[in-house]
Length: 151
Image (cartoon, rainbow, N blue to C red):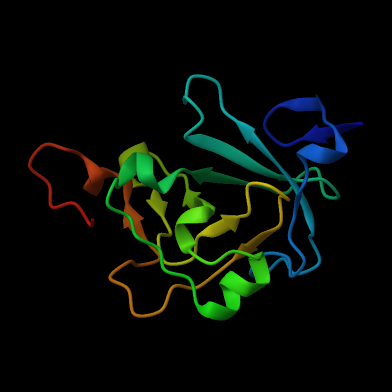
């Protein structure tokens, strides 16, 4: 199959490549199928979460562990059951990024990650409770030299 994408033009994909969001994303509850497409040169840590049904809808997402190796998202028992796992560590995580100029002013939402079951590609977006993570962490704050890292 093929779709037009926001950042990559036409892209070929297989049914098995789809991420299925039964509940959609926050604010986009009607969007249920997405592709995760890596940006060139990012080593798979910077990606586009591309809607399959709406070509103009794509979110920039980042592997949160590439920014914050100590990131520890803890899902609720209900969320774990929904995804069919026993522990949060069995899942994949991405955080939404709002890209700004300069790039150091871009922000990531560590509080509301996209969570993916790696085997069946079921995905949800969650709100982490009782956590030090916020919705707008500046990318510039993750630098390893001198700044106070949020993690």
